[in-house]
Length: 113
Length: 113
Image (tube, rainbow over all chains, first blue to last red; front, side, top):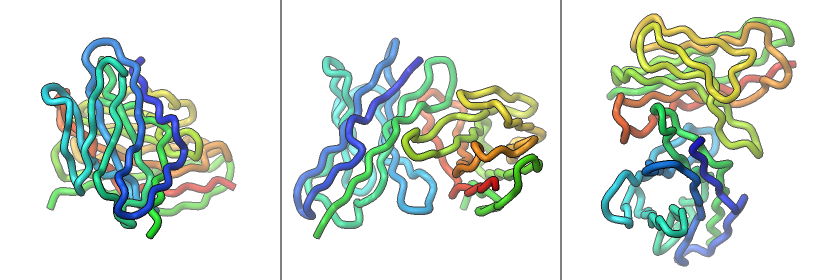
Protein backbone atom coordinates (compact mmCIF):
# COMPACT_ATOMS: atom_id res chain seq x y z
CA UNK A 1 0.00 0.00 0.00
CA UNK A 2 1.04 3.56 -0.59
CA UNK A 3 2.24 5.30 2.56
CA UNK A 4 3.87 8.46 3.84
CA UNK A 5 5.91 9.13 6.95
CA UNK A 6 6.35 12.39 8.81
CA UNK A 7 9.42 11.90 11.01
CA UNK A 8 8.86 14.95 13.23
CA UNK A 9 5.97 15.25 15.66
CA UNK A 10 6.71 18.94 16.18
CA UNK A 11 8.70 21.64 14.43
CA UNK A 12 9.53 24.94 16.12
CA UNK A 13 10.68 27.98 14.16
CA UNK A 14 10.98 31.69 14.83
CA UNK A 15 8.84 34.11 12.88
CA UNK A 16 10.60 35.32 9.76
CA UNK A 17 12.82 32.24 9.49
CA UNK A 18 12.40 29.61 6.78
CA UNK A 19 10.47 26.50 7.71
CA UNK A 20 10.58 22.90 6.52
CA UNK A 21 8.15 20.13 7.40
CA UNK A 22 9.42 16.75 6.28
CA UNK A 23 7.62 13.94 4.50
CA UNK A 24 8.90 10.75 2.91
CA UNK A 25 6.83 8.39 0.82
CA UNK A 26 6.69 4.75 -0.15
CA UNK A 27 4.77 3.97 -3.34
CA UNK A 28 4.67 1.64 -6.27
CA UNK A 29 4.39 3.55 -9.49
CA UNK A 30 4.06 7.30 -9.84
CA UNK A 31 3.18 9.08 -6.60
CA UNK A 32 0.35 11.56 -6.22
CA UNK A 33 1.34 13.57 -3.13
CA UNK A 34 -0.56 16.17 -1.14
CA UNK A 35 -0.10 18.55 1.78
CA UNK A 36 -2.93 19.66 4.05
CA UNK A 37 -3.10 22.05 7.01
CA UNK A 38 -5.42 21.81 10.01
CA UNK A 39 -6.10 24.71 12.35
CA UNK A 40 -7.52 24.00 15.83
CA UNK A 41 -11.06 22.62 15.79
CA UNK A 42 -11.26 22.85 12.00
CA UNK A 43 -11.23 20.46 9.09
CA UNK A 44 -8.23 19.87 6.87
CA UNK A 45 -7.50 22.42 4.17
CA UNK A 46 -5.72 21.57 0.94
CA UNK A 47 -2.36 23.34 0.45
CA UNK A 48 -0.78 21.83 -2.63
CA UNK A 49 -0.24 18.66 -4.64
CA UNK A 50 2.37 17.02 -6.82
CA UNK A 51 1.12 14.98 -9.75
CA UNK A 52 3.83 15.31 -12.39
CA UNK A 53 6.08 17.93 -13.93
CA UNK A 54 8.12 20.52 -12.06
CA UNK A 55 9.60 19.20 -8.85
CA UNK A 56 8.87 22.45 -7.04
CA UNK A 57 5.17 22.87 -6.42
CA UNK A 58 3.69 26.15 -5.23
CA UNK A 59 0.55 26.26 -3.16
CA UNK A 60 -1.62 28.37 -0.91
CA UNK A 61 -0.45 30.89 1.71
CA UNK A 62 3.09 31.07 0.30
CA UNK A 63 3.86 27.39 0.88
CA UNK A 64 5.76 25.26 -1.57
CA UNK A 65 6.94 21.67 -1.65
CA UNK A 66 9.89 19.98 -3.28
CA UNK A 67 9.45 16.54 -4.80
CA UNK A 68 12.67 14.50 -4.72
CA UNK A 69 12.38 11.14 -6.41
CA UNK A 70 15.82 9.85 -5.45
CA UNK A 71 15.23 10.58 -1.77
CA UNK A 72 11.50 9.68 -1.94
CA UNK A 73 10.71 12.92 -0.16
CA UNK A 74 8.12 15.65 -0.48
CA UNK A 75 9.09 18.32 2.07
CA UNK A 76 6.88 21.34 2.70
CA UNK A 77 8.66 24.68 2.81
CA UNK A 78 8.07 28.38 3.30
CA UNK A 79 10.76 31.07 2.98
CA UNK A 80 9.53 33.20 5.89
CA UNK A 81 7.30 31.77 8.63
CA UNK A 82 4.39 33.64 10.19
CA UNK A 83 2.92 33.11 13.65
CA UNK A 84 -0.38 32.39 11.88
CA UNK A 85 1.26 29.38 10.17
CA UNK A 86 1.18 27.56 13.50
CA UNK A 87 -1.02 24.52 12.85
CA UNK A 88 -0.99 20.78 12.23
CA UNK A 89 0.35 19.72 8.83
CA UNK A 90 -0.40 16.45 7.09
CA UNK A 91 1.31 14.83 4.16
CA UNK A 92 -0.78 12.37 2.11
CA UNK A 93 -0.47 10.02 -0.84
CA UNK A 94 -3.22 8.77 -3.12
CA UNK A 95 -3.92 5.07 -3.20
CA UNK A 96 -2.97 3.29 -6.41
CA UNK A 97 -6.34 1.67 -6.89
CA UNK A 98 -8.73 4.41 -5.93
CA UNK A 99 -9.23 8.02 -4.91
CA UNK A 100 -8.74 7.83 -1.14
CA UNK A 101 -5.69 9.43 0.46
CA UNK A 102 -3.39 7.81 3.02
CA UNK A 103 -2.25 10.38 5.57
CA UNK A 104 0.84 10.69 7.68
CA UNK A 105 0.48 11.16 11.42
CA UNK A 106 0.90 14.89 11.17
CA UNK A 107 3.50 17.43 12.27
CA UNK A 108 2.66 20.25 14.64
CA UNK A 109 4.28 23.50 13.55
CA UNK A 110 4.82 26.21 16.15
CA UNK A 111 6.02 29.61 14.97
CA UNK A 112 7.10 31.89 17.80
CA UNK A 113 7.22 35.69 17.62
CA UNK B 1 -20.86 28.56 -2.45
CA UNK B 2 -20.53 24.80 -2.57
CA UNK B 3 -19.62 23.20 0.71
CA UNK B 4 -19.51 20.09 2.83
CA UNK B 5 -21.29 20.05 6.19
CA UNK B 6 -21.27 17.61 9.07
CA UNK B 7 -23.76 17.20 11.88
CA UNK B 8 -23.81 17.06 14.77
CA UNK B 9 -20.52 18.87 15.50
CA UNK B 10 -20.46 17.42 19.01
CA UNK B 11 -22.14 14.31 20.36
CA UNK B 12 -21.99 12.48 23.66
CA UNK B 13 -23.50 9.04 23.79
CA UNK B 14 -23.42 5.87 25.87
CA UNK B 15 -21.84 2.52 25.14
CA UNK B 16 -24.13 0.30 23.10
CA UNK B 17 -26.25 3.05 21.54
CA UNK B 18 -26.58 3.53 17.81
CA UNK B 19 -25.20 6.80 16.50
CA UNK B 20 -25.42 8.35 13.04
CA UNK B 21 -23.18 11.16 11.85
CA UNK B 22 -24.42 13.07 8.84
CA UNK B 23 -22.37 14.39 5.92
CA UNK B 24 -23.80 16.53 3.11
CA UNK B 25 -21.93 18.05 0.17
CA UNK B 26 -23.14 20.39 -2.53
CA UNK B 27 -20.26 20.03 -4.99
CA UNK B 28 -21.94 17.10 -6.76
CA UNK B 29 -18.79 15.05 -6.11
CA UNK B 30 -19.02 11.34 -6.80
CA UNK B 31 -16.40 10.42 -4.20
CA UNK B 32 -17.08 10.65 -0.48
CA UNK B 33 -14.99 9.47 2.47
CA UNK B 34 -15.14 9.08 6.23
CA UNK B 35 -11.96 9.36 8.32
CA UNK B 36 -11.34 9.33 12.04
CA UNK B 37 -8.61 11.40 13.66
CA UNK B 38 -6.86 10.21 16.80
CA UNK B 39 -3.74 11.46 18.50
CA UNK B 40 -0.72 9.50 17.34
CA UNK B 41 -2.58 7.97 14.42
CA UNK B 42 -3.29 10.88 12.13
CA UNK B 43 -6.30 10.24 9.90
CA UNK B 44 -7.49 6.73 9.18
CA UNK B 45 -9.99 5.78 6.50
CA UNK B 46 -13.22 4.18 7.73
CA UNK B 47 -15.46 3.86 4.66
CA UNK B 48 -15.72 5.43 1.25
CA UNK B 49 -18.06 5.63 -1.72
CA UNK B 50 -17.47 6.34 -5.40
CA UNK B 51 -21.10 6.86 -6.31
CA UNK B 52 -24.73 6.13 -5.48
CA UNK B 53 -25.21 2.62 -4.09
CA UNK B 54 -21.42 2.11 -3.93
CA UNK B 55 -19.75 1.65 -0.53
CA UNK B 56 -16.36 0.24 0.43
CA UNK B 57 -14.51 -0.60 3.63
CA UNK B 58 -11.43 1.29 4.64
CA UNK B 59 -8.62 0.54 7.05
CA UNK B 60 -10.72 0.75 10.25
CA UNK B 61 -14.26 -0.20 9.21
CA UNK B 62 -15.19 -2.60 12.03
CA UNK B 63 -18.18 -1.29 13.97
CA UNK B 64 -19.15 1.26 11.31
CA UNK B 65 -21.43 1.27 8.29
CA UNK B 66 -22.38 3.72 5.54
CA UNK B 67 -25.04 3.96 2.88
CA UNK B 68 -25.20 6.10 -0.27
CA UNK B 69 -28.71 6.69 -1.55
CA UNK B 70 -27.93 9.96 -3.35
CA UNK B 71 -24.90 11.93 -4.51
CA UNK B 72 -25.00 14.53 -1.74
CA UNK B 73 -25.07 12.42 1.44
CA UNK B 74 -22.96 9.74 3.10
CA UNK B 75 -24.14 9.10 6.68
CA UNK B 76 -21.86 7.14 8.99
CA UNK B 77 -23.54 4.78 11.49
CA UNK B 78 -22.05 3.26 14.60
CA UNK B 79 -24.31 0.28 15.20
CA UNK B 80 -23.34 -0.17 18.86
CA UNK B 81 -21.03 2.56 20.07
CA UNK B 82 -17.90 1.56 21.98
CA UNK B 83 -15.50 3.70 24.02
CA UNK B 84 -12.79 2.95 21.45
CA UNK B 85 -14.88 4.89 18.94
CA UNK B 86 -14.45 8.14 20.85
CA UNK B 87 -12.78 10.27 18.21
CA UNK B 88 -13.11 13.16 15.82
CA UNK B 89 -14.74 12.13 12.56
CA UNK B 90 -14.18 13.89 9.26
CA UNK B 91 -16.14 13.58 6.10
CA UNK B 92 -14.53 14.50 2.77
CA UNK B 93 -15.43 14.53 -0.90
CA UNK B 94 -13.59 14.74 -4.20
CA UNK B 95 -14.31 14.73 -7.90
CA UNK B 96 -13.68 11.53 -9.78
CA UNK B 97 -10.20 12.21 -11.11
CA UNK B 98 -6.82 10.78 -10.22
CA UNK B 99 -5.52 14.21 -9.34
CA UNK B 100 -8.52 15.35 -7.34
CA UNK B 101 -7.82 16.65 -3.86
CA UNK B 102 -10.18 15.96 -0.97
CA UNK B 103 -12.37 18.67 0.53
CA UNK B 104 -13.08 18.20 4.23
CA UNK B 105 -15.94 19.05 6.53
CA UNK B 106 -15.38 20.70 9.91
CA UNK B 107 -15.53 17.44 11.84
CA UNK B 108 -17.80 15.74 14.37
CA UNK B 109 -16.44 15.13 17.84
CA UNK B 110 -17.95 11.96 19.32
CA UNK B 111 -17.57 10.91 22.93
CA UNK B 112 -18.74 7.45 23.97
CA UNK B 113 -19.14 7.05 27.73
